Length: 289
Image (cartoon, rainbow, N blue to C red; front, side, top):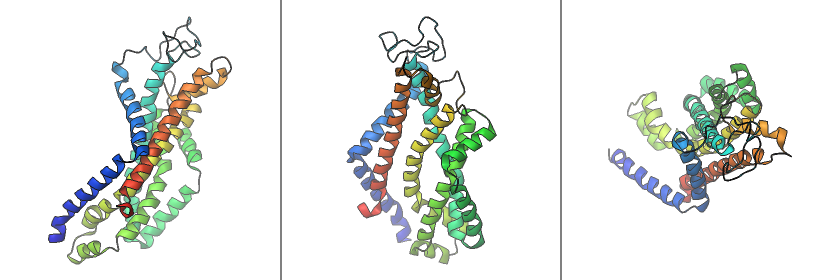
């Protein structure tokens, strides 16, 4: 009972140390700042005083950045700043929800494979290895083409393509954790498999899953941009950084700003999530405390 009573205190102390270490990491803070900036822009898009992102103007086609259009206009006279902000909603939503799908499917299968072993582990591991043998982006493109072009289908395709990563990661962590004394103690007092997995296994494999999820969001954003570039993601006239790049490739010499701004945005957001993921990895690593 003493050990059980002390567990929340220990977890709270470890959480405080991790947060302190994360705050002291300049790279992690830079990553969080970038992510927060784009998140606020995306969430505030409906109330910001910006033009309609799909409104065209034949008198303002491919205009360079100016006081009227801070980032210029595209081939249909649409305001690029407005489309950038609304495109951030699509990219961030795709990145986050794709990873949620991957975690929601991959983590339970990883826990089952690592905890039970035997034929359960054999079946899940072989399927996971087969999926991992296919390049991530190729698999996402194939699934998106099969499901049909739309942002929601792109998120499902990216999530399913990233799922094997979480199965393998979770399985490896569970194999290490399930031999710990506290798990053996829980087993000896007669707790069922479900209780052990939820109360003792899952909380102790969460840290690496959080780190991997943060890094995978960056990969998912690139994948969503790639699918939209190929016409398999967000559909016109809705704004998406990938589809903006697809249009901009035809006007690189006449209107380079059309490609520059979405390219910079994708670069910054991906860098932000990678910096945050690296910071979380250092902060949540028990060997660093």
